[in-house]
Amino acid sequence: MRILIVEDDEALAEALTSLLEDEGYRAIHVPDGRSALAELRSGEKTSVILLDMNMPGMNGWQFREEQVKDEALAAIPILVCTADARAEDDARKIGAAGWLRKPVDPARLLEAIGAHCRPVHPSS
Image (cartoon, rainbow, N blue to C red):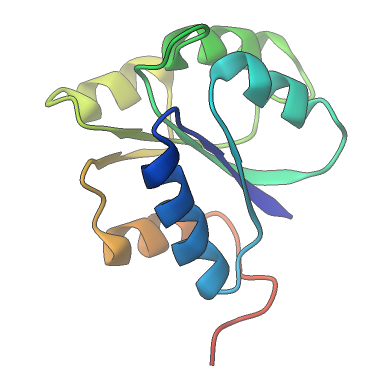
């Protein structure tokens, strides 16, 4: 199983991916909601989605609307990951499993991810 990072900031996405992979998780990054839907529909099981809310093209709000309409994708937990001061409210409004404020605290990220999946290869 894997973690899908939906984030338009390439540097942040690479940092999150590296952190998660160093901890034994399998992570993949896409730059927007439309790409996220395509990736999720590719068939590979996803354990949790880290979702930025403010992205060009299809933003996090639009992505979540489409995700819940698709029975095969609706139950995948979302962790909102945003710099917006209303992160907790945004997460609640879309029915997310949790939220993280940017800049992301690595320990908090790993705790939030760990609530939904286990590493493929735990770090030593």
